[in-house]
Image 1: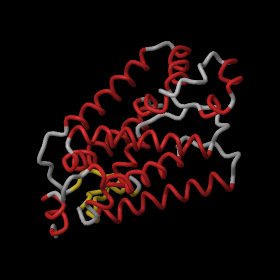
Image 2: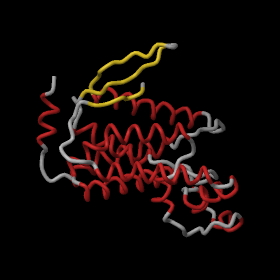
Image 3: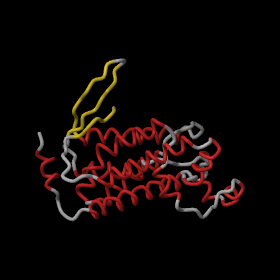
Length: 236
């Protein structure tokens, strides 16, 4: 299922969401222009490598400062490939603008970064011996999805489902789309737990940790019920 758009209008220009998208894109393009060895060092320095904080000797051996906790934030702006960044930018474009609309620009950036840091911490906590960098905006985006799940459950999301060579489009409630998203995260996490030797390209703990953080924390960043929420509840 590929989300295309949602039905909730945005009353403000989501400058913070746009800025995050631009920064992620510029960083990704800059890394493409780097020599491979430099890009790898950049990923390990500014991505969150769990064993770096669990085993300081490992960090020193590879020339990484073990106390460089800034990577719990900087990893949110790094991506490992075209597909990785494309999916994250799509989710930001569709869902983040409405949450920024509810919170306002200042509160939203604090909420976004806080969810991202908590998501990264969850990934570190449950995979402390991981030696590959954890990168990507998906943990912070999961926080946005957690807020969206509770604020706009009956918004309509248009999704694309490719069947062989035929793209099919469906319109479903946001609560259904995001519910399936959570189930998929749990399924992948269970598979990774049952088969620990299986390689994975996604930080499932970060996804779930970010979603829970967003679901729990988002009321603290909203002053009052938005007219948008009322409209969303009554739409169709």
